[in-house]
Length: 233
Image (cartoon, rainbow, N blue to C red; front, side, top):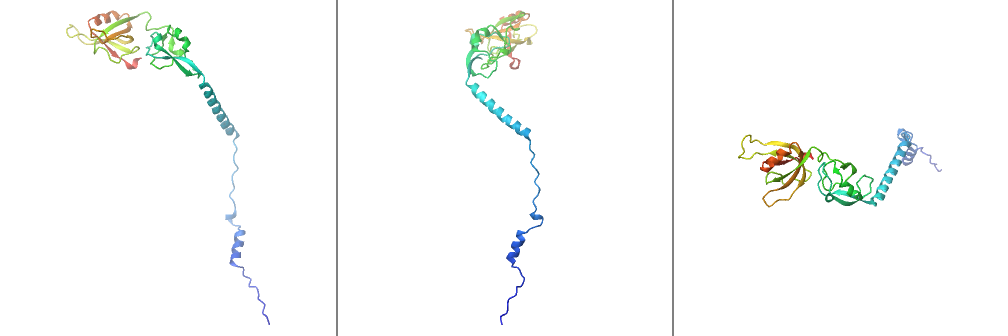
């Protein structure tokens, strides 16, 4: 007689694991809620406008950079209140950026005017730098020429600088021998060339006409010295 095999009722371990893995119902099987994304159309539109504006500005600069115009540049230092001369001006080619530079074609009119402020070489001339009248060369002013020896003037002195005019008494002079300032801020109008007599050079300064006779008198005896004022241009 054949004995029939009865099922034991046991489930294979692998099958049990597969069933458990496929039917997870615990907290691990639940997904965390994702908050909805906030859409900001205003910021997006602003970003697009900024990109387009930058591209347009770049294109405009590139297009304008090819347009060259003739302008006036300063080739020599010009002091505030001094007249322009043709030797002070030179032609340069610059990009047309819309800034009010004085055109080279206006150079003749520029020489009829004066500098509003001290201009150094390389400066591109604008309309705001030019004035039709000068207080330095107007009424109440005088031009005084000085023949100075070594030690009476700085070696770096240039046209347009500001200087103190100092009375330096000679050793043999009687009375008060202390130095004193005759002009606090005189404009250097012209720089000459050294002479054959050993003088360091000729310097023309502009001072108040009330003090010019005294400066001329002391200059004739070699009792005048100039002190440069770099920060007073």
